Length: 297
Image 1 (tube, rainbow, N blue to C red):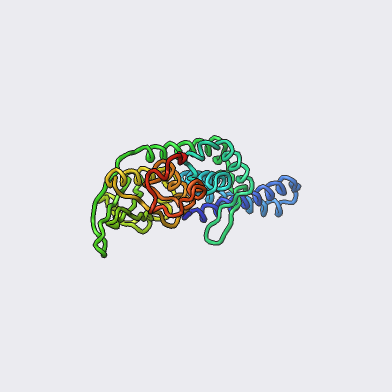
Image 2 (image 1 turned 90 degrees about the vertical axis):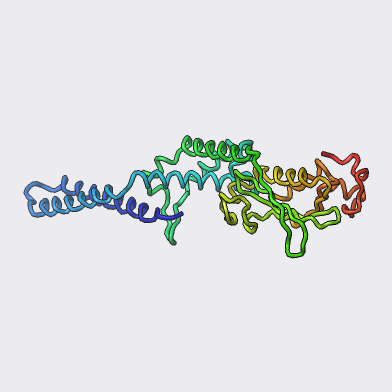
């Protein structure tokens, strides 16, 4: 978050000045008419405070207030979703399934929420203009917009691919999902097997319209939407004779590899498959298609 610290300080300063002004006006109203020197001093002080309040109000941009309220609503939803559906996309299918629970948690977290920036903390309760915009309906509407937006990205089936060779001369297949930017590189070992790397934060883009690697924030927005499954299945379509071994699994790649393995256990390895362990399939690379008869989908 950037640029909201001054806004928060201005609002808090304005409210303190308003409190001081109300106190001075109350004292003025209770001061007898014949105490004219005291009344003159209080009137002068009230006028000074009134000008300062007006100055602070002029500096409180409605656009900035709305931008901060939008940020707070987004942050509350994000924090709530990470509690309710940890390791899942905060606007993905899991969020849709538990929408009401996440929304209730976001509102609960809002009661003690503070805007933090540059080492300073500004309780939402001390920012009335912002707090008034962070409501049940505003958080719900923003969450549904984000859910619909990410669903549209995930629904896109436009994929691009290129082939090249690594420094060892091994053939590689790059596959990228255009709408999200997620990509993976599939290295063919030449013996009927291949390996996969799907770190979009390390792999360069093959889309000339979106060059470079993805940032962590960019990846987190689209991870967990089952876009990876499209990418892996496209690689299998392009190289149907290759069997793909696994590597280290993350919170997102683990469930993906499990789904791929369950759908086609001979094609995709999954080291944590309980059915394979129970049925004595300890060396996936040496298994035959018949070995997986009866494997659950």
